[in-house]
Amino acid sequence: MWKKGFKISILVMLILSLAVALSVDDWSRTAHGKLPSKTAVILHAVNNNLVPVDIDVAIPEFLTPTSKGNTGVEMVKKDMFISSSANNNKLPVRIYHYSNTENAPVLIYLHGGAFMEGYGNVDTHDNIIRTLAARTGAVVISPSYRLAPDHIFPSAVNDSYQTLVWAFENAEKFGGDPDKIAIAGDSAGGNLATVTALKSRNENGPELFAQILYYPLTTFQDTPFESRATFDSGYYFLSRQVMMEARETYTPEASMWKHPYTSPLEAESLDDLPPALIITAQFDPLRDEGELYGEKLHEAGVPVQTVRYNGVMHGFISLYQIMKSGDSALQDSVRFLKETEHNKVSVQEEYELTVKHAPSGWDRVKEEAEAFVIAAFLVGKSTFHYVGDM
Image (cartoon, rainbow, N blue to C red; front, side):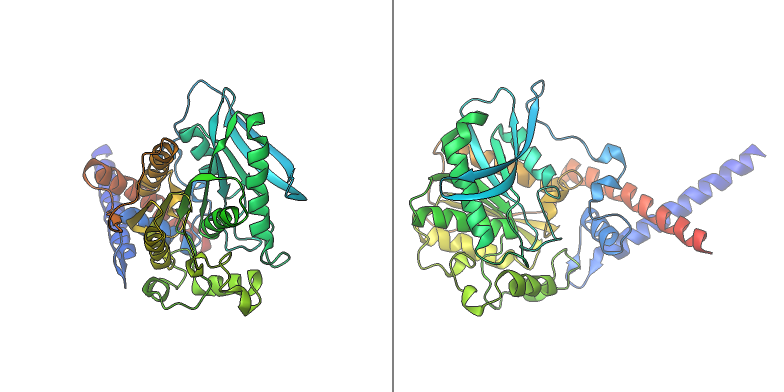
């Protein structure tokens, strides 16, 4: 009797494995080519509301390792309000730093979220903020800048610049070095990061030693970028509809769209900006404008490293705990900050776009295995949900 039960169990497992494999293959096939399994599984899960957007909550715990950092030393988290000599506005910020920090670099991090309420905040990006602090040893300061529709341009720019000035004036209180400040951000936050660098240059503000831009929006103009036309459906986590809504709410007047503090790609001069690391994603409507901005920085004599990650979508760095490419992008950031801090970057003779392909070798095996486990979780969840509805 037990042999019959064993055979049935094996048969069921084989059928389920085949169902999962066929599902992953189906999810991977798109009009834009075949996606890596991990990317396909995550996109399917989020776009079909099978897991919350905060996807690491729904994935088995062993697939979400804690970030590595300065072990044995306490990481301090502080939420507070700030005001600077440039602006008396009381602005909420979150600060991460190690308890034993001394003369550490300072990193201002500006979260993404389409400039609008309900799309992103310090909490939704806490994993990136915390991990950058852990891996770089920097004092990381992230402001809750004001959002549209209640606060239109230039409120977010002013808040970002206020944070920079405050950091310069107060960095030493947290073990930071005011002469070593860098700025970073993703998507809308990437826009604000490079805009803040522009504003600081124009107003003789604090000098920045680096800027890190994750898939930044660099123009509000209706520029016919191929990536905007190809990946604008929203399936890859950013849609044309959201981009248009962001423009209508954050920059309600057409005259704002060409301003260098909304569209740095349109700035007359990009001279004397800090060295830049720009990271883009293959399946992202903002890909082309981020890479073009890198080219324009190079033409202005700014040291720039532009890296496109293939096989991933907009926002992939937020999923670094379950996507190897996201983790690799964070490691690129750590390396770049160290190199720029010690003046080890320079202007290349020709502009170069580095393309990093989907993980290979053992990393690919691991990604495929994890994708299969996640897919089994999703297929099982869908199956039980269907049975429960019968």
